[in-house]
Length: 172
Image (cartoon, rainbow, N blue to C red):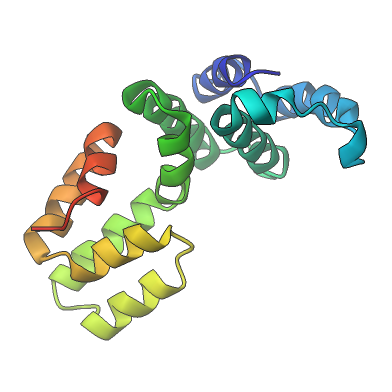
């Protein structure tokens, strides 16, 4: 299964055209065909398209272990598809995946932090335990309130290419 194939399946799942069980059935074939012994594995996808391969496998495992066929899982699938389309880069989408998974919660925490409900220490504790890439954590730790608001606006608008670009420079 290629990343393009997987993206198509996730798009259909997000649109409600596939059930979670049907999506996972597609993964069963791929997972069964993957030898567990590294010496038996084909290294070509990892040598020629490692970012696409890494994202593809991460998404397969993410949705294969999903237990709830609910709106949250469908929203995530749609976000992944749109992130990949808007960034046009598997590596960037892979890097943003923890943010995509946690998007609503992150922005709710930012709003509560901005309203004074969550202290700076509480905000930093959330970031420390978040699983975000280290440079994203650093950016969030140093982001002024307006930058956090802009980040959440970009996430709400699914402007993932702008989110990725924002994390590449100091917050202001």
